Image (cartoon, rainbow, N blue to C red; front, side):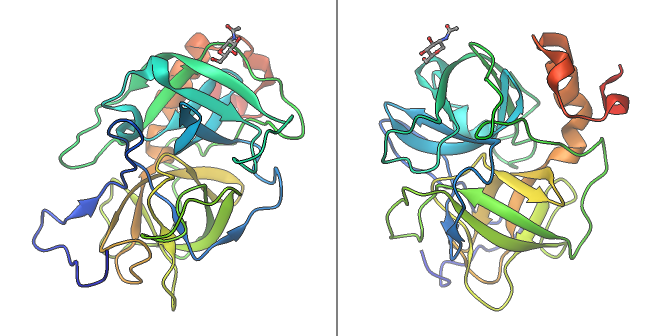
Length: 265
Ligand SMILES: *[C@@H]1O[C@H](CO)[C@@H](O)[C@H](O)[C@H]1NC(C)=O
């Protein structure tokens, strides 16, 4: 994929970053980032099938992971495992906690417009919270991020369109932009160089000021095109919906480091 592959018209050729690992899987990767410090992002989740990473995710409660709807949309969720506490995917790591998926909650994902690209996965048990595994903090309803905000995109996606998937978690500093972006997305760009999300980490978190504000959704014009912003599902627009699921179903509500005001309903 190069910049010659330009989307045209309103139906922009959005690319859901697909890794084919024994089935249709959509995911993104990080181009031009750097290695994360081990367990610097303890809410980061690797969604795997048969031991292969295909999408990222965020631990949003001890027994719930948030990801992109397109990651699991066409898949039997019973074949998916959520791996918490990972850093180097090619090594056995004691820090890991592995869960299977018990239930899937969607919120009107539209595969044509790619709107509402969010899913909540209920795990088959509750994670043990420690230095390597922690619950992410989310924004309150409609408290989104403004243009110019500096954020971090995080993932195990490929390092370039034709480059391999990294074993070590990558992070990339990005800036929130509003051009070529719908109100129903958060979009980011890396200025003055070709960098961005790409194949292998859809579903992963965009972290801004300590809160997870986005879920990697799609790219346009190729990975790290340098022109088209990367698009994320806007977590703040789904905060009440997320909390309604977590509060209704959570086994350990008192353990969430979330603002009590956003939990009362
Ligand atoms: C949950 O699933 C994981 C991985 O599939 C398994 O190892 C674990 O024993 C299960 N836990 C419970 C409580 O069923």
